[in-house]
Length: 249
Length: 312
Image (cartoon, each protein chain N blue to C red):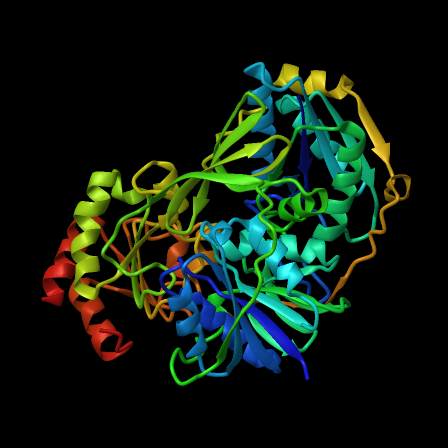
């Protein structure tokens, strides 16, 4: 079976973003960009399923600027077989991306699509679920374990009070949580090999998808700042402050 | 008049507190609020929802295929009930985050995730970049599908209302998923989302055994919930549902103890709205001290037992 893995190029998770002074967004100039960490976990899971002989091909797909090619090369260095870029300089929102991935899936006919559960830039946590709804597939979100056998997927997923295990007929949508796996580092030979792998580029219009944004960002502000706290010398002072100053105990 | 539909969160026996915060967000938007209870044998949930102040009507869909609250079946039901509503809201908790984007996609509208404030009927504030940038967004869609960050809204009163309960027909069972089993972490402590005091531990505790040995006595003093940083969960000290952070639980208790937690951006995103933050860490440069109201640079293995003794 084929596995499709949608990936997103985002501000690196180690970067503390700065809100622009004019309130129009965050400052992305000269900021390090990387693959969304949850998508790295998704690629890793797909590659492991291929290495286990369950999947036959892993296809990475990204929707966005031409620069997403770099991110797709990283996905191929981890082990994706080929990649597709749906190139657009429109602000692609989750519903539009879900529709684009649906159109790609209609061509590629994967039996599983593995999304990262959430992109760490817009923190929306929507695209996988939306894709599942549009295709009518079942969804296994926030997965911590995926087992595929006999045309069925058994997925353990993280829930608020613990974990639950669900069984699905393929095709299925999986979205990854942190504990699903630990992605490998791309080795230099694999980075070199990835440069030669196939990367096709499409446009949203080729796929017949209207990607017009539905949400307009009116302004972006810093969060309310916490007043600077104090260091206390010892436990006695801490308890005194909590009692007499903060009055929380 | 504007009509809003709030999806109740529950376990078929009791209504989860997050529903009250979601109703509060709906009240900020304004209009007639209906609450949808989808479950199996969940009449007691509908009765509890009917008592929420400011709710006009409860829609109750009671059928076996809603017992496990699978996203596919619940979303299909919500869509079947969507006509006439300008806003559909759920809490940004596990079930809401799982289910509601399906509703949005089926209605061909955007979802506005994790709102923390309401500016008008179509404009909302939501955190992005782990809470480091607060975006004000305006929706152009006819129906606004919204998840609500519970810490952004004080809960509506759970008593005082007397909404009518209207049984509604179940939607068809899609039969797409089968629940094999659920492992719920057993604890006598309050839930992270509802606790007034939270004691959280990080990698500094060294092991799961030490985590419990050191933190439980402190948590006992306050009937506190226990939380953890991602590092502590990844290291296997505690299960995943303890995780506080950008992609774990978002909490805002009255008092938050960060013990042996360095304070990565992702952790701060989950707790920096707490009223009072106490940090105990032996590294005086740990970023957690930048958000802590009271910081104590000390060996936690000495300081925490001392703190427990001092509290008497």
